[in-house]
Amino acid sequence: MEDIKAYIETGILELYVLGDITPDEKLQVEAMALKHPAVKAELDAIELSMELYAKENAVDPSENLRGRILGSVLTNLGDDRNFTAAPHHEESDSYEEDNIVLLSKPSGNNFYKYAFAASLALLIASTIALVSVYSRLQQSNGQLIALQLQNQHFTNRVNLMDKELSVFRDPSFKLLKLQGTKNPDMAVMVAFSPAKKKVMIDMRNMKLPHNDKDHQYQLWALVGGKPVDLGVFDATADSTHMKEMKSIALADAFAVTLEPKGGSVNPTMDQMMVLGKF
Image (cartoon, rainbow, N blue to C red; front, top):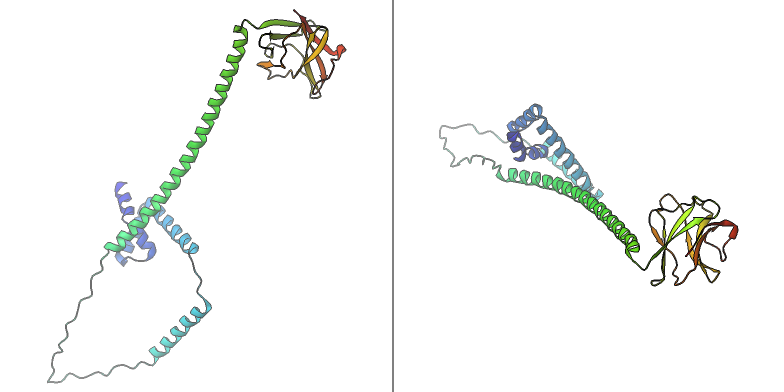
């Protein structure tokens, strides 16, 4: 397998596609392609790359240039037909040897064309490697973003739980359980800190029917016998945290009513769900 890889990296396959090899080298390449699927696959890939490159960089000749080329071809063809054979001189007894030294045809040096082919192969391989690295980098970035979001979610969850626990650790908070007024199974736990003017509802252990989309529960504080709005909330399946309501410094009792979505100015007394007094 290493020999096949080394053979591919010599650049001879690129020269084969370019038509710049000797007949013997051409036969060798075709024999290797028939014998080794890896060579055949690499040869097909190079041909496809060359074809795409040629299409991408093709330039149509102008009409003027096309006419000049065709005219030149026709003129040269006419000149060739008018050529006459050079006269043949009979050898004479007084033959004198011409003082001409025949030069042998210089042997082709394949170093540069092999170097070019090898460079082209290296360029193609480098491009493929860069595309692969870029794809892996994009995938790694996506995984990193997902981990960061997961970590942020975990941090927020920990902070929320710590905030909830701080309510139960803080001696300034008073816990009051609101009991059902119509159904004894209903219950809501309220944490109230007059010093900090904070009111919290324990959504996790709340026992209220799930409200529909057109209604919400509304918390009220009774101060001197008058109801004070402390905000609305929903009793849904994902209610699993402590919800902070509007601030108040003094309250004699708390109550929850079912109101139209957004809350009401005054509580609907016949829709009172739970009530609790200190």
